[in-house]
Image (cartoon, rainbow over all chains, first blue to last red; front, side):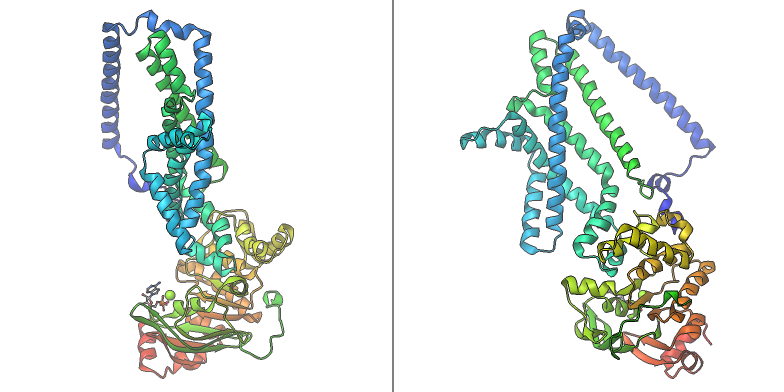
Length: 275
Length: 257
Ligand SMILES: Nc1ncnc2c1ncn2[C@@H]1O[C@H](COP(=O)(O)OP(=O)(O)O)[C@@H](O)[C@H]1O
Ligand SMILES: [Mg+2]
């Protein structure tokens, strides 16, 4: 049984390729590489034809101030995303614990809240935080007008992610914990959650990426994030395509970094049995 | 080896475990029918019977992993608590060993064994680890103390699971088919640990079809079928002269006598 345990999902789903398959994979790789290169060439040619590669669209990237302004935006994006991500993790976990608590009214409440945040588009929540507190005479910094709704939207998804993780922990683990005298709460904290979290690390990463992407509607509340600052530069330099290309690359790099960081964290926490 | 003996506490003359007229249903299925069983201090009772006859369920009701519909379960003369701290304390005093070992998959073997003593008994890390290492030594997996369960063989895992239960210094141990998930060559290493426990005076209920084990250490064999205790007796009596037809059929089917 330990052999089956250590078999990773990838091994289970895909057989190691034989010589014929390897040959076909090589041909496939070559063909797709050529196709991708042709596509890129076509795009660049089109940009050239339409004049998008003209120096006036790109010279702003030679200026230090452009990068400083984008850097400030990047810091804003990182700050909002980390704050929202942290709140969402705590809130998502709390909602899941409430929902699985076995206390009927609490469970029902948490379920409704979870489904609500999961179902409502985050942009709608952002509009809510933009308009409603102001109507009530509350002054809310734009940072929170962005971070809170993004966090709430993610918390609904994370509650479900955590619940799936908890359900994936074999029942025998719980029974063993109870049988040595742990309480329900101790069982959850020491046995179930640590395993559940390891099961769902890939989904947590995916959700953090969604959080980063959700923050890009910061312009609604005029919070100076990367996207908002890029838009300012676009208007002042009239450099739409070049700017969007550059920040797209930056967003991809951020999310790539998130992936790398989480894999690193996962390794550090010693995920030996679950890959 | 008397080291494995239970910390003898004077609890009068009441049986350590007693089931009185226990009934249980799973929906329409009547899984325990008027089950009466009494296990005295230091007694080893082997429970045997066809699959689905309610052996696991009976074991699990004793530490309330399953609730019962009617009847009574007494531990040292006291009714089994239904909830809260009294229940967790009672569970801590009854060791349970599962067919699938159920070691905590994310923890080292050592942490598996010290979790209960630290969380439930409030022992310090040093105290808990010292005793845990002693126990792991006795069951023969001390070398594996810092590995995670998946790195151990089935037999090693089950012996570690026994150590985990023993770390709570239980009054009695429940074994639910502890060797059924093991490759044949690993069965004896686990049974040896159990024999030693029995000889050390541990009160035990063991669901198993290992007749050799039953003959060697059981004080009594209980035969269950369809949720009922059909007959009980000394191992030699039961295996050599089963009284009921059901027991005879069952023993034939597992290649008995
Ligand atoms: N959680 C459960 N829900 C419904 N039926 C169950 C459950 N657990 C066991 N059963 C049924 O109860 C009967 C007795 O099961 P069990 O105690 O596991 O038998 P044994 O251990 O003797 O094989 C079986 O018919 C089984 O299918
Ligand atoms: Mg069973």
